[in-house]
Amino acid sequence: MDETQFGQLIEPAPVKFTYSTPGWYVLGALLLLLLIVVLWLLIRHYIRNSYRREAIKSLQQIETMYAASNNYTDLVYETNMLAKRVAMSRYGRHPVAGLRGEEWINYMNSKWRKKSFNANDASLLANNLYTFSPLPSEQASLFVSKTKDWIRKHRK
Figure 1 (cartoon, one colour):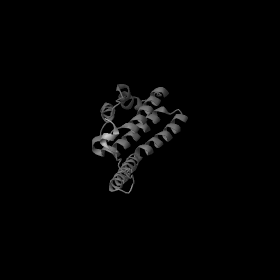
Figure 2: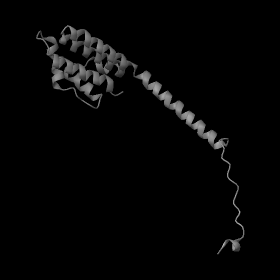
Figure 3: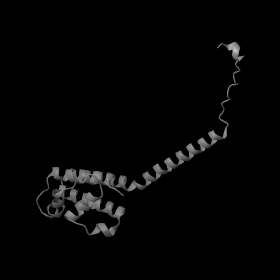
């Protein structure tokens, strides 16, 4: 079969492409709405986590102040008090205020995935803070580091 049997082939006119069709307006509106929602969620997340940034800043000041004077017992005490204030502001006073020692450590571990606080930390808070023996700097800095991680990553 050749072309002469069918006659001349007629090609259609090219389809005009333009952005002024209603579908593009709908897509543009949906993308704009999506952008607004994402921005709103990011801003809300930033505002809701302002207490974490403030607590980290306070912890760094506490760490600088007490580590410079080699007062590691007070460093651990103030770090623990800061963690309690953060927990009370986030979870409420009633479930947090009465917790001490191992109960407090278990509560902190229940509020994040890492669960890095252990029996040594519970012993540190329950016993070592109230003795006159000096606290090793490694133990204090480890507790401060764990607390800093907890402040950054605890669940809501």
